[in-house]
Length: 289
Ligand code: 13P
Image (cartoon, rainbow, N blue to C red; front, side, top):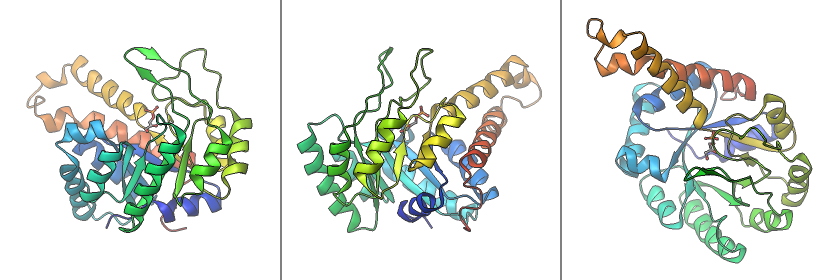
């Protein structure tokens, strides 16, 4: 059964470890992540952006696929199906389709509007026992080939948004989505500490988990980060493994053209990546802790 993400993140926050949000793109992706988490007895958050949901056919397709895999693969660890960077309308649609956790990303709106809309989403989601992530300070990243630097969220704004009854908070601390540029300055721990101090006892979320050096992620977890989002890293290992399959001419051997064979190396690569992250976030056995 799918669950909301509050309990698993509160537990991670109390016990000083991280829970991965792994973004999904299709059935193979989802199955690989669920199998790795079941093997490691780790709770997990499956992240779905609006673009990925559209690609897969829509929120209902995703919701039914995840429910079906959770059931048919006999998954016993807590699994949350989470909308990643949802718009106001997208949040409502995902909620109606059965998502168990929603991120409403109002970070590009003026702060008063972000607060108003976040409040509405909290009320709607909590009436259905669905957890809510809000965001303050945009997470930079590559858009149309331009890489923007990660913003630093204002601690006072974090305090305001954290007090709206949300369950966890994403706040920019210099992190960006995608591969980090050579001259990236690293995470801003001073700002993270200020945000933690201002926001109070609430799990914080680190977006743009791909490529942040391990010791920085550890330091962030020690300072209140309980959810780490990973997307690009799984995409990279999937594509590398798939490329190798073709470069080695395996598609030309026997029934190597069968998509179930073609997608297998990428599937295994994602599984390995998720296992590696679970060990590193120290959330192995978190389903039982
Ligand atoms: P990366 O793609 O950089 O891993 O970031 C994922 C993310 O933050 C999704 O919200």
